[in-house]
Image (cartoon, rainbow over all chains, first blue to last red; front, top):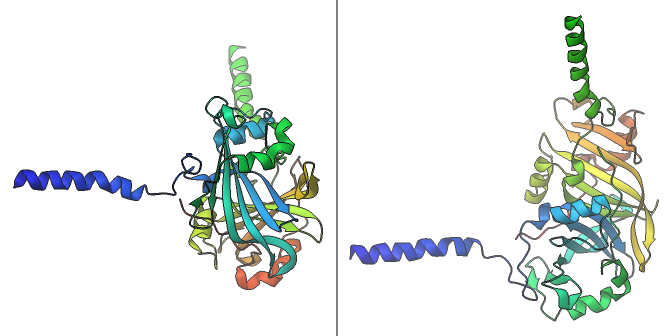
Length: 164
Length: 164
């Protein structure tokens, strides 16, 4: 009996970390980039054609490359994230267009060998506040990015930031 | 002679750290918030009236408060930064308005006691890529922020971010 209780408790203990690590499922087979909400910014944008505002962030490798101007090509290990919200007018300043509902967060993962078939990048997107994985194929992403294939497939020019 | 050389070298050594720590001078008596370039984002904006795009960042205290919805009042220790660039059209997608030249980076420093005279916030601004301190008085800042005095003097509504 004691052995049975021990085995049950061991099994339970093994499950707990998995339960707590239960983030969004992969998109195009790529794991969700946990913690991106605290990554530093690389740029911002307002797409007036579909009235969305955007925050472009990067992991440490990407931010370091952006600040150093080494982005063509971006280095392996760089991850770029674009967070997209529907735009709305700020209540206290109507000419300011600011985020309202979240549309999606989408990411490019640079690994020139692993993702050689998709131009050196893995392409992932997670939809809405529940971050539901997009899984219609990376060609949906790459077809739209074709105009910037000579810029290593990245639309964003990193914004200029002053040094301290 | 040996004593003189020793004293000269000691004096020189004491000066070196100051020379390397020579960041932007204070604005309204407030020290430059070193390292803000790597702070997490709280929101973004496009002010269509003066065609500037903006990134709103926060220090750890501010980001934690923003994510928890505890922003009226913001907690003491919170620092909010707004980075302002002239807007330009992205070359590869003309309907996207993106950063060009840096206008300024401006900051609000919450300390309800220290800055009681200016509504609980210290107000600082640094201009251009050289981050030249603005020093025309915090009333220039507070007069513009008066419409949001019931929101603890902050225009920005933190954007919604999904949890992992």
